[in-house]
Length: 379
Ligand code: KG4
Ligand code: ZN
Image (cartoon, rainbow, N blue to C red; front, side):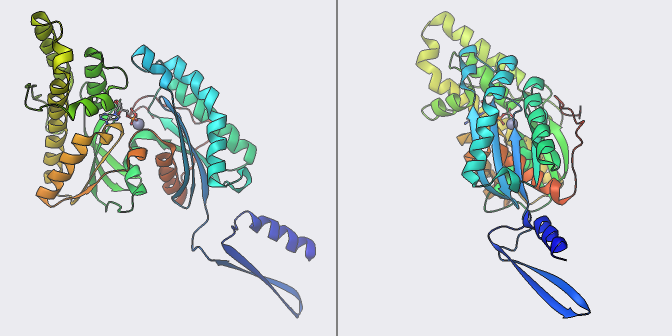
């Protein structure tokens, strides 16, 4: 009896946190009976996840308990800036260097031990193949070593779900504009794991438009934050940029980039100091047009779908002009605006954790044979 009791106790031990209480009662009528009462003081299902993000140039790990983020460590690979963009091979090597320390830091900050983990989540794609392989292999080895399940997460879905890390959460169905370095998508979100991409870019992503524009002007990498900062001092009406004519929910940014190139060429012909003298105005005008294109498509889609909640997500949602005008648009139309906190806009593992939390609830796990995918639609 005691051996059985002890083994049941051991089995249950893993599921119990400091906030729970166990009562064991014995009744001695026809032999010994044992009753277990779990009094969960925190009212939570007690799932603790470790999530890993390594799709591009951020090595990140987060720990989450029942959907609440306990830690989110992000190590940004600043080494790429000297090359003017992310160098895939270098990114893979830097992930290899950083991943153990980043995971250890995430566990430490969360005050969670490896033994308490219930599952390991990882970004499966889209992203850079070598970079994704580092996180995928690490997650598999960790899950295998601890004998716990593995959960694969779609990076773009995770960006959308970053909106659930805020106090005020969107109500389903809602429309999300996901704008990152590699993607620009209008997503109709029906549930945590039920999303449909209804529109996307036919060429460059919005983040790419920022990065390439900054590169042409010699402002460094990543360009988005630099353009955002310089634009604050400039006049958004100083220069005119074209509006692309593409399908209803489609985006296009390559024409904008070409137009910037010609503007600079013309200006530099007349004055070699053109960029230096006008960079604030150029950034403000260029940024103004990117935001105008994004919000116009969003407005159209929201009207067609009849949604009441709108959200933005991804690295470009950190842009101050987009955040400001998105809120203005929603206010004017009576829509509820949702924007992730800055830390959850650019790549981070907290968003992978929240997505994995919902996959865990739905019982969706990955197999140990899962391989990364690099592009949307290739999963
Ligand atoms: O989501 P993210 O961190 O990585 C990808 O999944 O691609 O997005 C990175 C992109 C880069 O293009 C970067 O320039 C852009 O987000 N970004 C910004 C700002 N902060 C980051 N773009 C405009 N304004 C910003 N403040
Ligand atoms: Zn991203």
